[in-house]
Length: 187
Image (tube, rainbow, N blue to C red; front, side, top):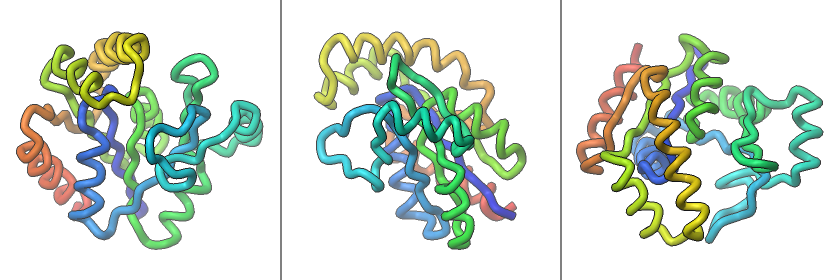
């Protein structure tokens, strides 16, 4: 059976770090590259980190029903999962792993049902999350304030996921994540 693993979390929770760890530990996984209308950050690469699209191109794909799920996270800041990306990974015989925002994770779980394992990564606290976002130094103070407010709201959705991992200690979070994935992949 074609399977998918969905990682969701508020920004700054350590989700991407855990997804990269899983990709190193489980060769049968392949990362699903999401599409977005936001600008590239730092050293990101089109087609590897995201498919960076214009708002117009993204809306055209919406009208063509090209997405498994998509969301307008902020005004004109769209994120989505292309059906073609999931099919490409399944055809290669791999299990899809997603790194998506919370609402995207819920939508993906609804779409894939029993084929999906949805994992919510929790920060230890909102204060720690804010500290991580500040130390990451990729966003201005206003953006960080917006992300922290959004994170507080996103944490209220955690019970809609199959598993919740509190990322207080990274090594412990990695071990917990590995065990959850082993059980799902071998079921």
